[in-house]
Figure (cartoon, rainbow, N blue to C red):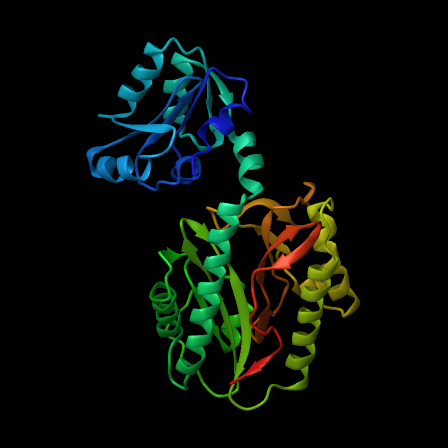
Length: 349
């Protein structure tokens, strides 16, 4: 995958320079902790250090982008200056102040951030295939995990084993730090897994995902372990599930993010639960686990075919329990298509 020339065409600049790791990965398909991608009308060059040179040359062998060794940032800037570049596009929001000042003294800068956001939000077939596989692996690992959940196992053990299973099933990495929340810990939307032990009569909230070819999946399932949940838990679970399904079935291309969010939020309001829904309905998913667009009360961007995002309504009662049900989905022919196949009805273990 080489998106360098594609993005340059969107910019009113002589050339572009990109140093942020995620943006470099999207441009070239090659991931590294250091590097710059330079592109003008004649060529594209990935500057890196000797640690990545061999891997980069192999990965970019059949692409438009060449590979060169850079001693430091200034050597890259001097190369650009030697090409008589006057107007340089850079992702201003991703620069440190010293980086910005060094570049500003040498070139007239154009912000490439909006072009990246727009281009990265709509996935091509290659990107969708990677996300599809990442979702398949996450669900495969989840199904294998269920038999591991026994009384006495800790949240940390559960999170670690789930991450192991995702790698065993073919993932290259986790999408983010896995959340395993037992009992009252499930009421904290982004609980940090700890040594809490699983006991009979506890809810189990699992929020996890993995990467394939650098692209993320994101899924949350809430279960009940041991015995039967009380009527309150079952009632709230059904409300969260219904809000999820309503959003899935009624979100359309052309809607604004806030309109999508309102589908689930308005239903939960009718159940008296909206004040316990403390985050947005969803976020974009791609190279990064949180991308454009935002399906939130303030989301003004229109949803488009090819976008990938989460649908994840949740309700949280402080100190008691929380319930979240999340799928990674895309828009195709104007409607939502979920990547996830696992059952979202309440699972009792």
